[in-house]
Length: 546
Image (cartoon, rainbow, N blue to C red):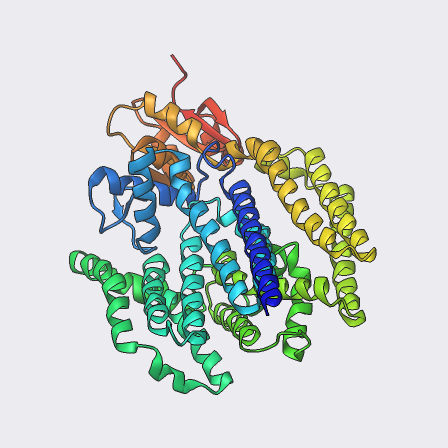
């Protein structure tokens, strides 16, 4: 008996050591992908500049209730990310790093919650593999490095579902976990609106229905839970609605209900829109997802049970929910990425642990599909080069070819290791390829792209030339990063005649316009003098520089 207890102690110490190593690797991986050179790039136009400018105004004005953009109330998004960014600005100043820090932190946090959920469901190894998969897919890395609200939603939805599952499985601490579930759902509503509680509710409801355990609803501390949920989610919505009578109609009816139901909604896309988005956004792991889903539905995995069913329901509910919505954007389905990561993590764990002939055959087909698409894409770019890519984004085609060749090489190396039955090295090579590709993009490609996606340089130059209080002027659309860098308001001239009338002013005026737009507006072209250029954007005036 003493020897058995001694062996058990050694085993527990080994498990704790392995878990410490797993957590350390996930932290280092997330810090590299999400935080590396986070503040060296300027904020990009559309979304980043918009949300950063809104948060900056919140700090400068002292109004933490009603967000404003360009001098007008901005109701499109709830308040949570703005609060987090504003707090970051107070600590670190008005910098790019401070604006992106909440996204990177939430991205890291979601990776760790995914690890903990996988650990609870299937053990530390599955949790670790799933955390790596979540941290190393294309869309998740991008959104964890961007000033955008979606990453806050995915973190709190994942956290809510984690606490629900912990409460569902752990009777001794059920009340505590379920109350934390309601608190997390409250923050999810502050992050993105009603969808923050609707998604977890649908997932939990369908899960309990399929499991035949709807009676568990009576144990979910609904009374206290609703109070906690409302205490977190309701105050801001009440305060902004009391101060702005038009808020309820705009946000809840127009931005949520009508955008979901109306075929005339902004960003209207067909029902199948998310199929290619999923394949591209979840690369390189998306090609193993069909095999993971088939394995889960057929009950082929060793540890099939409530955990696997919960993940499948999680995936199906969110995918169908957003597929049925009229308004669709690629970032909307991010809340299903943790579930996909866990399903694919289970799949790879089975390959590492019990590499049956059928499973290896399934992996072979997945690899062949992935490695068939990548060389074809590379060959297509080589014979049909995107010549406008350089003029639109500043990326030299040679670098793009090198990038694709490196991706193909990394995928090929992972495949060769798989064929040699070195499955751990195959997984590590796949993840390592993603890390190396993104480091190459951050260090080599983004410096060329930044001038085409940000208006920082021209905005700073204009800010020194314009008298205090005068507005920035843009043609065709707002360059919102300029609002962050200048603290000025802006005017957008939407028609050529408006631009022509503006340039005919008796005083010297300035405008930021795209070089392509200026080239096609012959009548305006003769009235302008180009003062400076940033990427594809021009700073023009109706007078020459003195």
